[in-house]
Amino acid sequence: MAMAPVHIPLFYYLIVSAILFALGTIGVIVRRNAIIMFMCIELMLNAVNLSLVAFSRYLSDIGGQLMVIFVMAVAAAEVAVGLGIIVSIFRNRESINIDTLDVMKG
Image 1 (cartoon, helix red, strand yellow):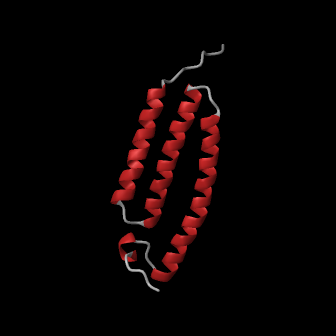
Image 2 (cartoon, rainbow, N blue to C red):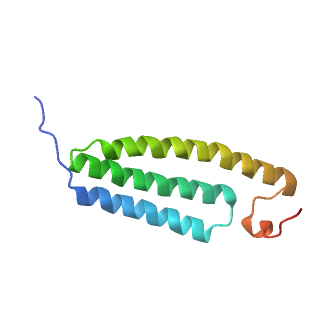
Image 3 (tube, helix red, strand yellow):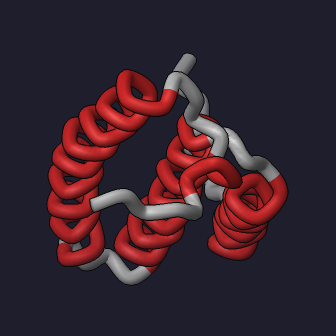
């Protein structure tokens, strides 16, 4: 027996996306650890990707899904560069606390 597909309303996807984006925003604002802030930014990007895919499916347009592929490629490059910067900061300062990085040295 094949079951009929269940259609989840667009509103539910947007609510989940908004909750994920809010959690990412709160994490960036509250936490002082660079790696945790970095993960929260990735969470925010994934929340936007979820809403893009949901709208793309709802409107039967592939443009949103193509945009998600580009966002994921940019996010992968951001992870590579960002983690390299964080590792470099940790090697020089032996801390990744954002509060200790307020002074720039020449």
